[in-house]
Length: 114
Length: 114
Image (tube, rainbow over all chains, first blue to last red; front, side, top):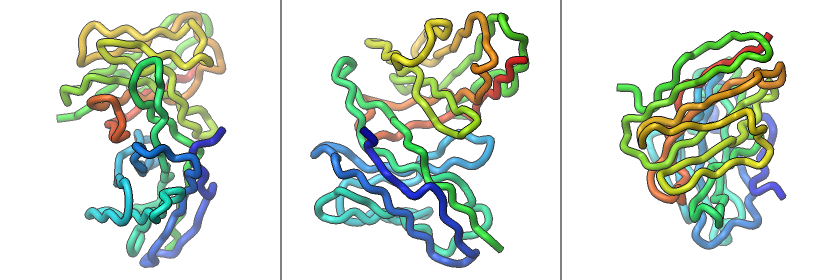
């Protein structure tokens, strides 16, 4: 059973705001929502994390509604260098180990067009 | 200083050979991971390991084995390489039980089996 669902791909023009929504209907009470960015030929990079409401950092904003069953990553005024795959993760608790696994879904491939 | 470093960056080898990929982290983290990213760009966890527990993804063939000489290193040994093992392998590390899902990834090792 997929823990998160995101669009497979999105296109945007430079300078626009991009919103990527992730569904996580079965999120557990203690789970954080975390987003990673992966450029071609590089490892994934943590970009933002939240538990509820809104979180903002120098890279992005993360909006989480009260029911926490979805979240939206917002990238302001994207540039060509924001072309990457964006992954939404929620907790995948492994009871045997007593720890959480970072389980990646298929991600959203964002293409920024000049 | 590179937080998570992998060597080599590229590895080309023949079927049937045995090879190793090294990973080192200087973040003081207590959990390390190996991921495989195939040609379709799916990131799949292979192992997670801390000083208490090795968690193996049940789909990983037993030709793959992690070796951890100390807390800062988690090497990946692969025996009897097959064509299907060609992929990019990423090492990562995190702190604590991983609930915050914040991990640091290496730059990856592109393995090509010919």
